[in-house]
Length: 148
Image 1 (spheres, helix red, strand yellow):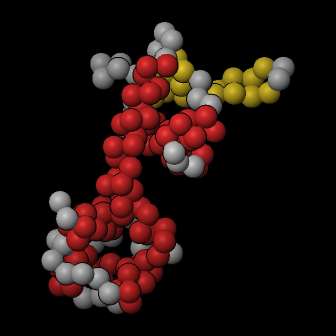
Image 2 (image 1 turned 90 degrees about the vertical axis):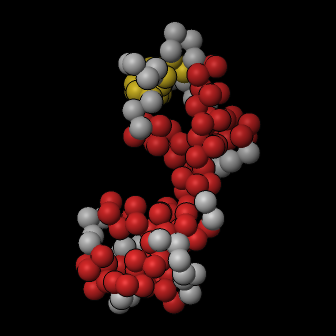
């Protein structure tokens, strides 16, 4: 899949997640329906002004929209790598995540590790347990098997 196709798929996903029809997206962004279809199918290269209009239509800033569009393409393999590390470190299916340690080990920021956790929770591949001790609060994760 080339970059334009990935952009188009991500754009379509964001539009649909926002509950927007092509017609509504056109109205919000000022971009014609036909051009939106071309963009979503990866047939045209968007200009900077078009990116700004798309972001406005999705009620986002351009960098936020860009990251959301390409998140799965860029981070999909990294999430799988992170999940594999968690599975290897799990004891009895449970693992405590030291976010700075994982971030350093994988060469990503701590906020990226938090996004990985959020995505794995969303996918139903982890379950989160919060606990409180005399030293403070913590979180432990259960690594779920496909049949769990």
